[in-house]
Image (cartoon, rainbow, N blue to C red; front, side):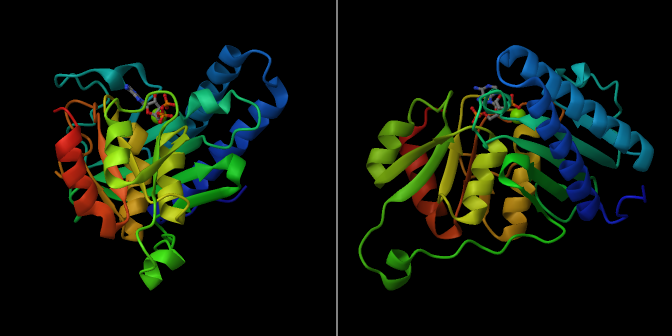
Length: 274
Ligand SMILES: Nc1ncnc2c1ncn2[C@@H]1O[C@H](COP(=O)(O)O)[C@@H](OP(=O)(O)O)[C@H]1O
Ligand SMILES: [Mg+2]
């Protein structure tokens, strides 16, 4: 087999695609009878593949991964050296693990993102890919997807249209039902932060709001793709999302079309409890 691409964005796409294919095979081999075993096998297979390829092709870089025991450490404990590294890969080998273990669902993803100390972006991410193996696509920053097209109603000004707002199907923020009613939004329950942000990128939904808990690896790769596409991505108080922090917890975010950002941030101010 030949070498993977040199350019980081294309390398991220290559890696997310390879891990995604391995996950499709795990699903086909194990079936859905034992959800716990399928989740564990998926996490392990994807994690080990990604770690091995990063060690081989990007040996000087540090890694922050959901499946590394050290990654959840807070308070500056840094055995992987990521807090002093110039380049850190932020990985979620299988986002939407629950959905991966349910037959027929395609809302699960592989996240591969690269943070760099000298990045020109506020989030610090310089390359990323979101693999959506069951949707047969990989979204990546090497060729960012085009900005989602406007709906006909919005383009012609034919009345207020309903905002489609993606949210976790298992752990949506408690305030979201009231916020949705306030702004006239329809909630679209979906698994995986990556799949939800990909749905904003492709225009299937207009926005994604989460609060109450998440880690950097849940959002790094899809946020990098969304911002490369030109979409809005921030904390729910409007401040910048920051990655490779001392504490990997990053509990809330808003990703949406640019034209909705002010309206949704104002609604978040009214409804979210800090
Ligand atoms: N309250 C919470 N605390 C910690 N992690 C959370 C969370 N809510 C969602 N997440 C994580 O965010 C990802 C997307 O969640 P959801 O599918 O509910 O939208 C999942 O990642 P994993 O599947 O990688 O564990 C999930 O674990
Ligand atoms: Mg995740």
